[in-house]
Image (tube, rainbow, N blue to C red; front, top):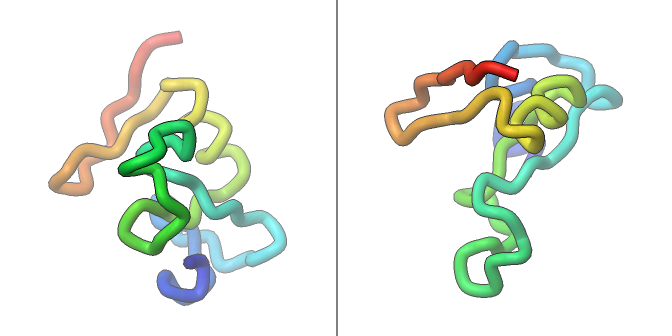
Amino acid sequence: MISAYRGRCSLSGLPEKRLLDAAHIIPDADEQLGQPVVPNGLPLSKIHHAAFDAYLIGIDPDFGVPVYGA
């Protein structure tokens, strides 16, 4: 999945593969929609991945990145 985005963070464009994670958009706990496939994933830097998982940032359908309060 990271290679589908040419090895870059989909938010910041960071091109360092060692600092990227494959992040689920819909959590894998959702047995139907949470599959580990490219359409359900984004490469995120480790800090963006942590912020996404903590619901501090989001990604909306038109690729906006809302930032939520802590």
